[in-house]
Length: 199
Image (cartoon, rainbow, N blue to C red):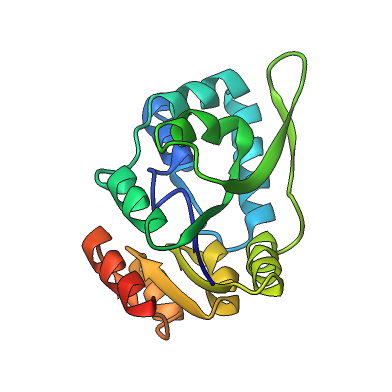
């Protein structure tokens, strides 16, 4: 049995925080896991920025609601579901991902939680577990699945390493240089072809 594990932001949808940077005109929000590999460090940086600029959860959620999936993402996901079981494994948060997931026909998604205060400000975040993407793959493997995983950034590497097959999708040059051992898909047609080869 085979299961496809996909990252969310950067693979199926745009980066929510990058969109927030564009809407708020605060360029520092453009920093993602392509730039800072340590996720705790990245989230502390983001939350500090939100406090500094008085950005609330409502502002962030509005940014997420205005986003659409990447062109061709829904069609790719429909195609992939016809050949694999599919799970979205993401370091985003349920509170932000909801509007975008509904536009992708609500695929099974495993991600994190935000802690939001009564004043509407984000107090903290709760990771599902340490190294969550690797643990998700290991859990599926313990159920007898072979995993073919695709992601675009540093926080996906443990998932790609743990999977029987790992694919980088439209990665940055920095990620490619640091992890040259993974095959690269530059668009959904190339990603389809790679998944077909693994069936």
